Amino acid sequence: MQKKIVLYSAGLFLAFILTVPLVAFSQPESAPPLQQRLEQLYFDEMQQVGAEPIYTMGPLLDIYRKNNFQPLWTDAHTILALGRAVIAAAEEGLIPADYHLASINAALSDEPDDDATQAVGPGRMLDRDILFTDALILLGEHILHGKVDSRDVEEKEGLAAGPPPEVDTDYYLDVIRSGRIVAAMQERAPQHPNYQALKQGLALYKQKAGQGGWPRVAEGPSLKPGMRGQRVEALRTRLVAGGDLAVELAPGEHYDSALTAAVQQFQSRHGLEADGVAGKNTIAAMNMPVEDRIQQIRANLERTRWTLHDMPPSAVLVDIAGFQVHYRHNGETLWTSRVMVGQPYNQTPVFRSAITYLVLNPTWTIPPGMLKNETIPKILKDPNYLANENLKVYDLKGNPVDARSIEWSRYLTRGFPYVLRQDAGPDNALGRIKFMFPNPFHVYLHDTPSKSLFGRNSRALSHGCIRVQSPLDLGRMILANDPGNTVTDARFDQILESGKTTGLSLKSPLPVFLLYITAKGDADGAVSFSPDVYERDPTVIKALNRPPRPLLQKPLIAHTPDTAEAAPPAAPNSAEEQAANGQQTVQVKDKAQENKARLE
Image (cartoon, rainbow, N blue to C red; front, top):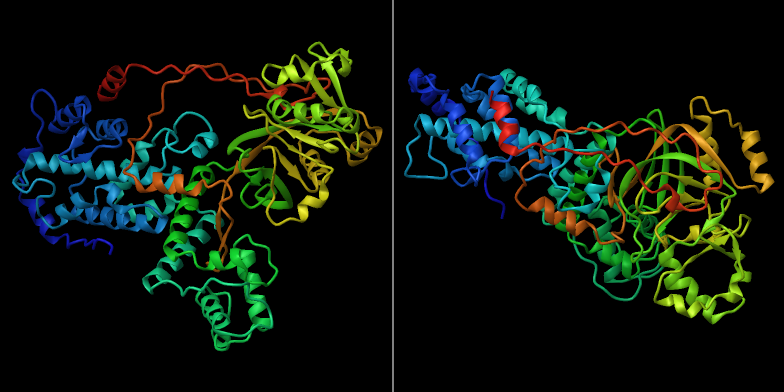
C-alpha cells in the first residue's frame, strides 16, 4: 500500500510566519544567519539538515548569494505550490519522497518534522528554507536531465554531451519569487510528443494497477485461430483489459478473426512476431504484472530525459531494442529502416557522436577480438577459409603476406602481428557503404550482404555494429541535406558502380544517437514495448528507486576547442582508425576555494 501523502492547508503555517519576529532574520555584524548556516552545512562532512541530505550544495550557495542570503520561502502559498509540484513528480515517474516532502508537509501542518523534540524556531525556519530550495532545484534538474547518476548507469554516461550541466540558479530564483512553481516544473519536463505520450501511458497503467491489474492467461499449449475453450475466453478478457480488443467482443470461447487481429495488435505492441498465435512468448508478455510494466515505463521516461533536452532537429537515431534506425531532418522523420544490432554477448553500446564521413565500397578489416575468437579457429579448421571469404593478409605496413607462411595456431594465445582485410565487393561484410563516427567502441553503421536476416523479428545478430537494411537511401539523403556538399545522386551512383573505395566527407557532421528504449507511447496513450534483449531495464529501475545522489557539479574547464576532421583518410579500412580523439583537459579547483568564491 502506498504511503498516504497529504498537503495541509497553508493557513496555520502562514499565521506562524506572520508571528515570527522580523529580528529573527536580521543580519548580525559578521554575516547573515543563512550565510552562516550554509557555510556550516558546506563544511559539514555529512551535509544534511537533521536526517535529510542536501543534494544541491553548490547551487544553494549561489542562489542565496543572489538573494543576499535572505530567506526565500516566506510565503506559505509558495510552499504549498512546492508541495504540489513535488507530489506531481510521480507523474514523471519520479519519487516525491526524494524531494523533502516530509519537511514540506511538516511545515504546512505547523509541526516539527524529523526531530519531534525541537521547537519550530528561527533556526529551524532557516533549515526548512534551505531544504525547500534544495527540493526545488533537485526536482527541476531531475525533470530536465534525469535523476539517474551516470556513475550508476553506464547508458547515461555514454549519452553525456560534456561536463555536468550548469544549474541555472537565476531560473530557480525567478520561479520562487514568482510563485509559478507547479507550472515551471511542468514546463521543465520535455515537451516532445514521445515523452508526453509515454507520460500519459504511465498514468493509464497506474490507473489499471489501481483497478487490480489484468487477468492472467493460464500457461499451456499455443492458442490458435479456430480453437475454443476456457483459455480462449481468458485470452479475450485479457486483451479487453489491455485495450487491444473491444469490450463488446469480450464474451465467447471461440478464437475468431476478431481475436486473431487483437492478438496481432498485442504482439506488434510488444515487439513480438505478429502471427496471431498466442504462443509461449505472447502469453508470457500478457502475464507480466502491470506493476512491472509501470517500472518499465518509468525507466524509459528517465532514458528519454537524458537526451530530449538537447536533441538536435537533425540526427540519426538508432533504436537498439526496437531494431530500427530513423533519420530526422529539421524536426521531421524522413526515413526509417530495419537494423541488426549486437548479440547479447556483443552488445551495441549506448552513446552519442556525429557522422563525419561515409565510405562507399568499403573494405573490411577484421577487428582483433573477432580475429582471435572466431576467424583464426575457422582458418585452422578449413585451409580454404581465407580464399572462400576473399580475405588477404597484410603486415602492419600494408605489404601483402603469404598466408601459408603463418603458423596460425601460435596466435590463439598471443597478439596477431598482421592485418586480415576483405576487399570491397558484393560479398564484403560491410556491403556497399558504411557511416563513420568517432567513438571508442569501434562501432559504425553499415550495409550487409545478409539481407534475408532482416526478415527476422528479433535482430540482435551482429558483433556490435549496426547493419542497416536500406543504407544507400540513407547515404543519399544525408549528402543531399549536407549544406555545401557537392556529391549528387548521379556522382554517388557512379562511385558505387566503379567499385573503388571512396570516402565522402560531410561538410557538417551529423549527430547520431545510439539509444536503448524499451517502451514508447503514442498520442492515444497506448504504450508499445520492446523486449529487453540486453537486460538493461533492471539497472535503470534500481537506480531510479534508490535515494538521489548529490548533483554533479560542473567543473571549471580549460581546453582548446577541438578542430573538425577536414577529410577522411585516403583509404579508411577500419573503425579503429576513427577512435575518439582530442579529449578535453578538465581542471577542477579545490572544493573549498570554489565555494568560498560563491559566497563572496
